[in-house]
Length: 175
Image (cartoon, rainbow, N blue to C red; front, top):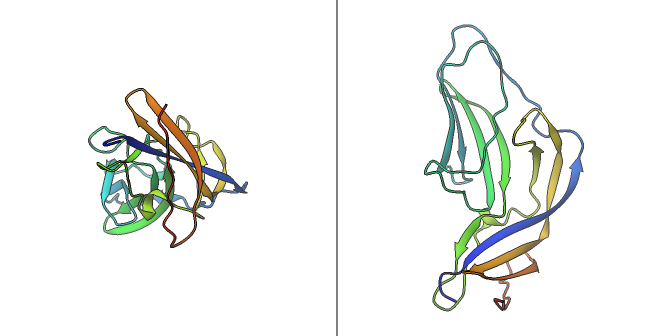
């Protein structure tokens, strides 16, 4: 099963009806250069969302379409939307992307999912992608994930219960 793609889909429940990220960025005085980027927890840039000198007033909450700087979907997992004003990081917002190719299998059909791809227990806000001012809720990710394995037209999927510091093995049959 060499080079089958592996997607991860998360299960989560509403954690709160109130956003976790309630901070607003208010620009006043002489504007400084501002950069908004999506980064991995290891601080690797995935996508630049904004760069420039913002006008005064409230800087809007930016949304991310889950594409990286190369125009490809970012792997499923945890990300951070970071707002830097001048030299100061003024806001960081957790973000979870899902249902994208996260890894591929090796010659033995085995694959590894890193901690970034398994943000179990993480809490994050969900907003409408087309209208970032519409808040749906804050959600917490379960210890169960759905793995979807695809090779050509063949697909297998299964829910997998994960345990901390435990190697999980599962057999998939592509049909």
